[in-house]
Length: 114
Length: 113
Image (tube, rainbow over all chains, first blue to last red; front, side, top):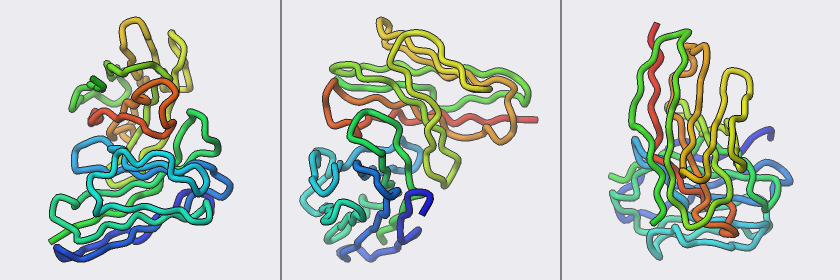
């Protein structure tokens, strides 16, 4: 597609449930990033992939959060045993190269944990 | 520490000029970004400054002073569609993970008729 695609757009989960959020970056983009954005806040970095390699996962808040990009294109962010504080918008972004350059963001997945 | 500060909210009138300030403190410097985010939508790239000075791009301009740890976004001839949050962002340190941007909380700009 022309842009970064994320699915689902909205996800409601019961506390304790596992969820999987999908990101389809722009074709050919080397770098892929996940951010978490709480209401009224700026995005906060979670993790970064260069192709299939996860080079930085310093922002993942706990071991319940796991991300993968096995073939260097589509990525999945998995959250196990969701808790209410996980409620946020999860943004995926990609960039063409691994150098410092602009990010193209998807519209995000809004996760609500009840 | 690593910190990005910008005002929470601003209001301006259609047709006017508004300046949104951003101060940053990072362990190194590797450029400063501005993004625009309409409510419920994805952030979109506006500008990237790595050298001191003003860069103009249509109605939007961005200024950087590395020695002062300061940047601003200047919006001219404001339109109603400019109502959005404006996010200032910078990598936390030179040579770090390029996507690990630290974002400010965003400045919510309301443009009134």
